[in-house]
Length: 124
Image (tube, rainbow, N blue to C red; front, side, top):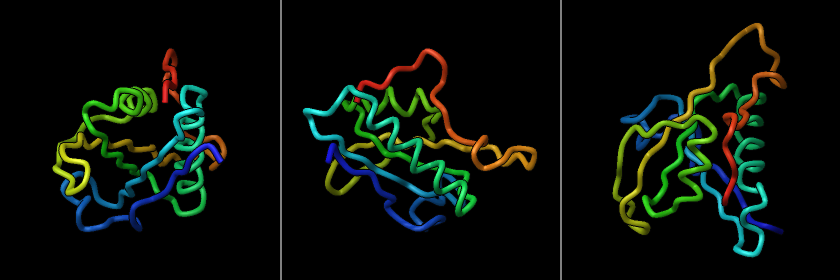
């Protein structure tokens, strides 16, 4: 096992409503010896693709500590934008990022997937 990825809630929890309706938040951990191999990017894309294909989820939130530069690069490379800040009881200050995947009826679920922006690199 190289790490784990998971959703923090079902879609549209009360605590995410100030940032986006019908969104889900996810988090991930890649164990240190496996970092900088693209596993985090692969896991996040897989999670978002799965949620979109099977549950039509189109809004995703990631909350990241400002000093977590690899994760900040990851979400930037996937097209997330900063929509706010919050204080987490455990982690302290976090930047809140949102990614909205367009819902285009001309695309199939397999072609409407998340892909890194050109020139982005996964360093987590």
